[in-house]
Length: 338
Image 1 (cartoon, rainbow, N blue to C red):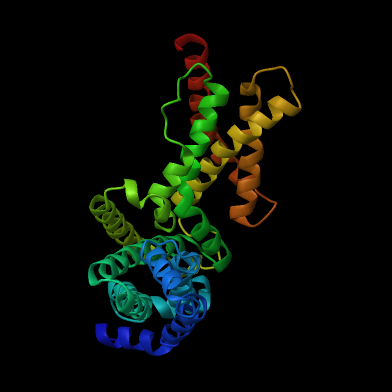
Image 2: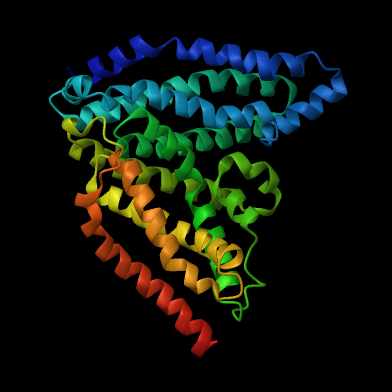
């Protein structure tokens, strides 16, 4: 198929998403606001414009997620993955035409909401609303596409869609927890609160932060992140093998990184639990490596979808070395540096 033919085919198949989204906007956002008296209506529109409307914030996550799952669901079945990859002679065409189709499906209903805000508010405020929501939708759209490119089945795609947007928050929070538990002499009083990290890295949380954030820098930053994520997702799509459909994760390097990161985070959390609940008075450091081993085994069984992981034990050596260096470094710093 030609570029335009691929785009037309996807829009033909999934155009019902537009009226369904419009119905959702009308039922949960527009009609409730319209039925309010003038004062409440104006306040509600202002809240909507500044991303304080709960239903609109939910749609920021739900609409891009649904569109990604509809557009790229053939990748999760080995029988349809090959046909999907060969929708055109050029895999790049398939990927980018799906992106354009997804953007059209997302933004067309959003225009209607923008026009509604324009009726009650001034054009500049409505324009800023449309800009904020467009950046937010496209950011989550790109992140969810990245999740779909890495996952081999729909279940893992959903897990990654939940995980990737909050990954900076999770890593930061676990890092702060590790500093408090294992580096008690380190002064982290000036470190930002985890909630601030969550608000700065997730558009759905912008409502609490818009007044103290440079919005121009914010939009440029998130647009740049979106472009980088889509570029990596495009490479992943082109390198993805159809026969890996059905696996938990389709790339061995990503699987390795996922197991390692999960094991490190789990070791810190489980290590503290073991130290406090089982070993009691001894240092939390004694729980780190047992925790790492336990989470490593669990994660290997999850990503391989089997209890038989004997052939994956050799991966424990490089991961164990990383963990030993990290945990040993914290022990040295805590006892002899700080």
